[in-house]
Amino acid sequence: MDLAQKLNQKPFKIAFKDIKKYLIANFLYNGDLDSINILLNLYNIYESIENIYPRYVTLENLRKDIIKIYRQKEGIELIAQNLSSLIHDDINRLELYLYLEAYRFGFNSKKHINMLEIITLKYLTIDELYNRKKLFQYEFRNEEVLSFKKLIFKEIRKDKQIRIFIKNTLSDVKKKLLNEKINSINDHLDLQLFFRSENDDVKIREVDSYLTESEIIALNNKVSKFLYIDGFRIFKNGFWDGVNDRVLKRYK
Image (spheres, rainbow, N blue to C red):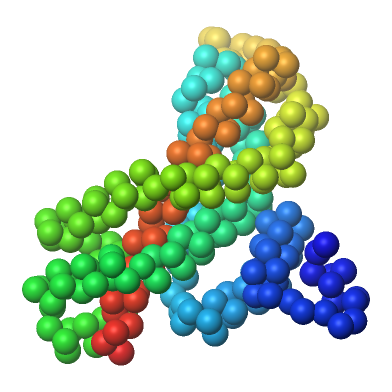
């Protein structure tokens, strides 16, 4: 029973987890922006999360990866571009959701927050912390901070519950949104014209850039593998940002 059905029943009791589940599904699968805004507000109320800044690079990385793998196929740039256009909004919503959940986990991980705070106070004064808007989100020089960041990333990679969460999320998104769009990629491709100049003559050649059934299956598998790997990148960054913001918040 979804939230809408519960609202139509009297009397009814709605738990926060039911609201969250409904809002997430409505955002991921229906593209409802109001749902994610409501969820962000709820997180602000319940967990004081204020700084959300995901890095939307998944789609561009995927496009480059597809071109690299199928570089021998003529017209692959158009295929990669069209696929990106088809799943662009879906992937961006997925990335935001994974980032948000990871941020929330990091923001509430007292062990990692305390450890980072101890490291922080070795290098920054309380006044410096008070005036900072960000902590070590983009730190590339401090070896102790970078070592701690690597440790966190390693722990995330080994965490069984996180692996299951990412895997299940990606599986649902692929099943409900991406599979159909990837399988119908040929419906969005046309014959391409290639122009080549020889001496003073211009020769035109048609290129069939349609994918075979086996190529579509391979593409689908590639997207799945890529999103799983990239899902960890998103989760690690979100978790790290959450830990950093919570340390900084202690001095505001």
